[in-house]
Length: 98
Image (tube, rainbow, N blue to C red; front, top):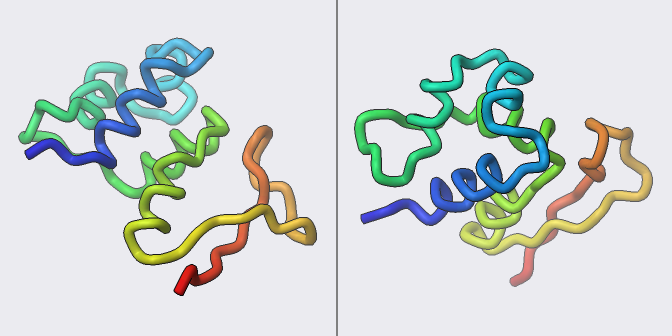
């Protein structure tokens, strides 16, 4: 069974305005390793949480974080009082949807 989260990350990396090879260099990971880790069909490699965080920071795309929050019954919303984390990422806070 394919992981929905891995499919989301795979799409983010491949659809990013920054080419995957350049993104790999920015996050300090060999290009081939990054592609293996985000490949939803490769069950031999796993994406680590630190790498996921770097991908979100460098692409500005928080869809994986939103997906995880939804799976746990939370939603994300911008935190107007927070510090800026990285270029396009907005500071966020989580609140329970329950």
